[in-house]
Image (cartoon, rainbow, N blue to C red; front, side):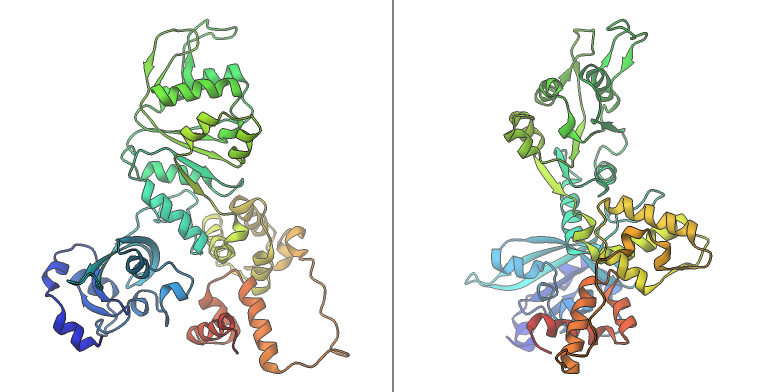
Amino acid sequence: MSYSSAMKDLPDLTAVLDGLPAPAILLDTDYRILLANRAYRETYGDGHPLTRRRCYEVSHRYDRPCDLAGESCPLQASISSRQPSRVLHIHHTAAGQEYVDVETFPIADGEGRIRYLIETMKPSEIASQAGPAPALMGRSPAFRRMLGLVERVCGSDTTVMLLGESGTGKERVAQLIHQRSPRVGKAFVPVECTGLPETLFESELFGHEKGAFTGAAYRKQGLVEAAEGGTLFLDEIGDVPPEVQVKLLRLLETRTYRRVGNPEVHRADFRLVCATNKDLAGLVAAGRFREDLYYRLNVFDIVLPPLRERREDIALLVRDAIARLAPERRITVDPETGVLLGDYDFPGNVRELRNIVERALLLMDGERLLPQHLPPRCRDTGLEAPPPLEGETILPLAEMERRYLARVAARYPGERRELARLLGLSERALYRKLAALRDGGN
């Protein structure tokens, strides 16, 4: 359908869109913007007309649809499912890049065919980087998928299970869920489940009365009571002793508990968030974790990806760590250092990255983070020097460029814009070359 015929057939929705407080657009099924409300024009306007342009050109600065550039496309999802679709994207705005909660609503004609779509965009509150604590930062697809799940569950009272390796930021995500929940005005109470014996664990969780056991010299408030009205965060839930698992299950089923040494029943009101780096399903199969408790806890699970699965975020995290640890210094990261960090697997994840940066800052005499400032484990890539040219098949320069670009694009941890600058290319030219790589061309 041509643009002119679409506009003739289009119902007048300008007033409807302008009545929406969030940026909103009306699209056809070919990604073209037919109408844009005032909020959208103010947020995404660049001095050029917005109508007739594709949505991905305006919001992402892409030359192809989101789903062909590694993103989830809500428009395509709505067309396929014929239902509203919601995703978390990073959009270019007049104020810079920001996380946006995008929701798309399909509009069918009298014959049931999807003809138009309304797309609304709201800045994501959970992706705010403000505050003194180390922020949740990332732009990789794996990180955005995780953050999208956090966005969906924050406003509910649903029990959340956070799954991820040590150092991926599980407690920080738990804090974020609490901060964006209706319980934000109440306490966030973390409980470290590792290393506590049965008697001490029960006392910590439920509290005890004076004289309840040897050494109980006073009445103690339990952590469940301390979390009243707020959020209880059980970290490393897989380490809860089997005997306590029974009492934890009863707490969750009845929302009641008893202090150690007192038969009186108390009501409990809290939102539960759990975390573990263990395979709970495997522990259930091995008889080391109660199956009924597992299903009580595993209501809404969120996997926090390890850093090796989100290498695109490493440069961003390095810059953030430098800014927080040495805000008064003007430090740059040597490109070779960036490549070494991009190759490193970070078994300790984000926590290890911050430690590496802190160590490097202490070793630096100048203002440039060089490879020698990294620990030996980061510099030992295991790569051998390339063999001499003699005896090798001479390849066309275009093939050498293709191989080099594939290697650098896979290993460079920074943004595509920075990679384009280092390669001496425009960002658009780099995207064309990367698209040729994906399509198998030159």
